[in-house]
Image (cartoon, rainbow, N blue to C red; front, top):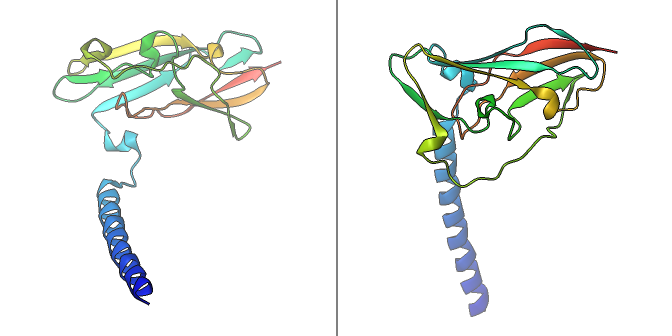
Length: 172
């Protein structure tokens, strides 16, 4: 009988601790929650954009995408260039490409790194823009005809907002 009473008290105590932990977690998450996408939260500050010199390609063509990041703030902005086209080659999935309702898998290089150092950060002065053109065929299978939608995805590591999507067509 004593064992049963001890077990009941143990589980009551555990239940109170779990409820406390859950309450703290819920409060923390609700304080971080926002319904606005990252691009909207940084509106009129840091913007990312992608563009193409043309919007129609043939299967097998090189498909260059020009990436822009612009600092529209009143001060300098420092960010990590990892997982952006500014690395001059794709080292992670930094684009969302959709074809016929399906998100294309990233097939490019995946780089595992130690935490970034000062050399991995770039500084954009007020009003400054940085650009880089990258061939997305190097990392995504764009071998089917049809209409595609692409956008840059900002990541926690770089703190950049997502770009607006653009569309392009691949013909046979």
